[in-house]
Image 1 (cartoon, rainbow over the protein chains, first blue to last red):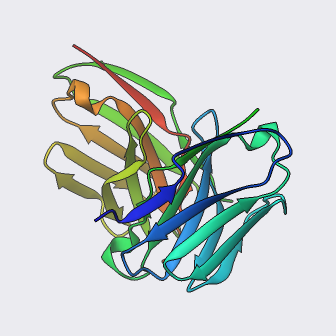
Image 2 (cartoon, each protein chain N blue to C red):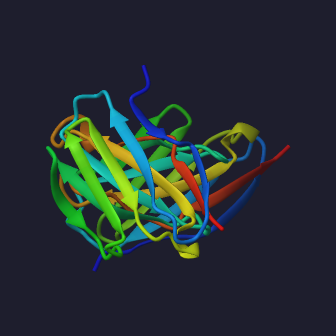
Image 3 (cartoon, rainbow over the protein chains, first blue to last red):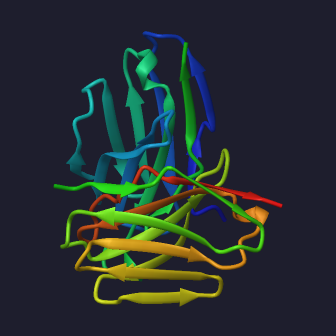
Length: 114
Length: 111
């Protein structure tokens, strides 16, 4: 009965590879997000989708491409991985106007680029 | 601009009160939140306060909001070792938009 789930939990890969992280929410929310937490624990928004449409795209390299096949899923594909992409990536979802706009977070995916 | 500031570390003894402070710059924030992150884990919403409130109490947690100074604080009474974690202050300008997080305060509780 997990609310927001992400796979994989850990991802170790070589520089230059392409990888994907998947996110699914079973809360029926319309809005989903990807946040990045760097090695200093700083959290920043990367993307936001509302009902499968891109709403926010912060200054993220275009090697990062989010894809939302339906409103319950928001996947993150990363091309040509670089050392600086090593971080923990969190997916979240919310339903605007409901329950004090709480965002529910997934457990995170720890990406390590060697 | 949008910026949320927090002190990075706080160390207390078990049983003491902890106070974690946060300042934000955007006065149009609708809600302000405190999230907790335990080591290796995700983010858990601890509490929130609506921008038209100045205080909220929830068991051992007290949130104070000073809109004039754009200052938010979280007080944890009777701090326990299980409270050791990183605490993030966050603001949300409007529903459906991203949270803007502070840099997090690492709370260390010693017995």
